[in-house]
Structure formats: C-alpha cells, structure tokens
Image 1 (cartoon, rainbow, N blue to C red):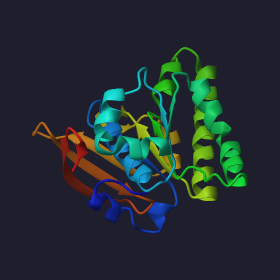
Image 2 (spheres, rainbow, N blue to C red; image 1 turned 60 degrees about the horizontal axis):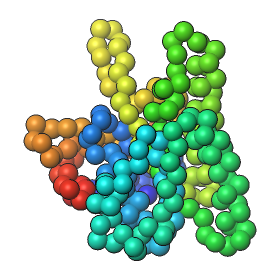
Image 3 (cartoon, one colour; image 1 turned 120 degrees about the vertical axis):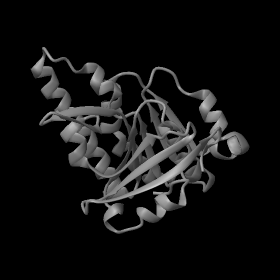
Length: 230
C-alpha cells in the first residue's frame, strides 16, 4: 500500500506487512480522513481504481475538494465514493463485493486497487446495546464476517485494504488503555496499524506504526497542513 509519507512506506515494506489489512485509527479530528483521502489520491493519480466507503452522516465535500484541489479532474474518475449510514447496508455491500470484482475482471474493466472504509466501526457501535446481548453477539459475528471478506479480497485479488477506525478505552488492573474500536475482533483481523495522536503543537501529529505479527513499532512526527500531512 502506498501512503503520502515516505517513512510510513519504508516501515511497511516488509513481506509480513503486505499480507494483511491496515487500520488507521485515533481520536476524533486528528486527521484520519485527511490521510486516507491523500492515500486514495496517490492511487487515483496513478490511474488505479479506488473504492472509498464513507459511513459518517455527511460526506466531507470540502475536505475532498481541498485534498484533491490541484488534480481533481485527473483523479475523480478513478475514485468511486459510496456513502452509507446503516450497518446492514455496509455489511451487505462488502459481503457482495467479490461479485463486483469478478465481474470487473471478467469484462476486463480492471478492478479496484484500493478499498477504503471510513469509518469501520461507527455504525457497528451505534447498533450495540448493553441490554441486548443476543443482538450484540450477532453484530460481532457480522463484523467478523465483514473483516474476513476484506482479508479475502486482499489476499485473493491483491487489493489494498485501508480501514479507518476510532478509539475505544479499556480498563485493566486499574489502568485505562486506548485500543481500536471493535476490540478483539479488530485485533484478530488487522495486521498493520497506524495510530495518529495529537501533540502539544497544534498542527503536529505523532504516528505510531505497528507492523505485522512481529510486534515492531515505529514512531514519527508529521505536520498537518490544509492540504494534508507532509
């Protein structure tokens, strides 16, 4: 997968890092959507097809036009935006996505090179209910299926998968830890992760990169500008 930051690309060069899907996670407003749009922009500029699934209430038209400003006409024809605000809809869409890929390959149209889901667990969390354990069990099962389908697309058709995710907090032995929303389900399926954190400087961000199953992490700082990270 190609990102707009050289050091991030260098870190994820290894063979193990190429095997799974990548999550991009962090607190609200740290720049997750900006980085995912920059990544989509790189693919589209190289004439590679991108599927961008957005699950929040309103598509970020202003942010899209800002990130793509200098080359909007060149890239927009290579990016398909899907907007959904219902967990059932995103589940059904991803569940049937392989049929779309196979049809593209059969008709030689060329299929997607990158799939972005922004954000992965927002709609899932809206459906959760502490008083309805049976419903929560079904939701966890469907989230597992959804992620399994994405991993299959990654491994079978070499499609890059980037999942944007939120922060959740877990308390263990009196200490509170930040983890990805989706808990153990996400931990099982996600191979590589990029966590973005704020710093004391308003426009600076800290990146915490985690690669594969080798427990190797890497820290770097980046500046968030109007056009994105640099």
